[in-house]
Length: 208
Image (cartoon, rainbow, N blue to C red):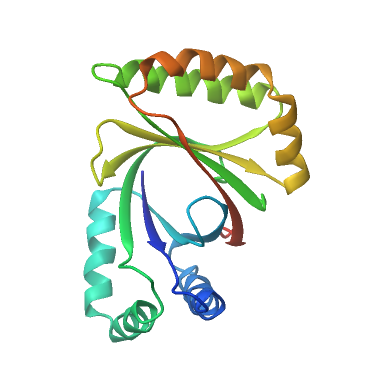
């Protein structure tokens, strides 16, 4: 399975207008697509992330072609472009693993990006898979592990953890469970750059 992310960064004062526009579009797409909308809480400025799951790359291609032929989508895209501080950023991922519901009813997701050092891609992937199992055994929800296909920055993985509220997230940061300590120890020697972290609030959850 594959995951498409579209990052939308509003111009100053346009956040509410952009949120309403993308929220309505996400909800209208959900009868035919597995799509979700999140908003950054902590990270590099206000960002809305429109995410869509595709069964395979053929399904991704079919959806892209449908958008090009859809006058309603073209009108939507034009309105969105007028509200952005910079062009939209498209990302595509291969899903390595995911929870049954991709985070279920969680209200927040914590994303961490890790870029493997040279010749360390498989070692980093295994460390993330081991962490996901250990973290879930501690009772947490690992929404997914994704390998980024585009844009290319070297072997790049994203791992997403789900939280019901910010109190649960705060407890995790404060207590730093054993699985997280072990992940840091394992990955620090095999990554090419410091991890990049972002916290997102779920605006439109995946359909149940």
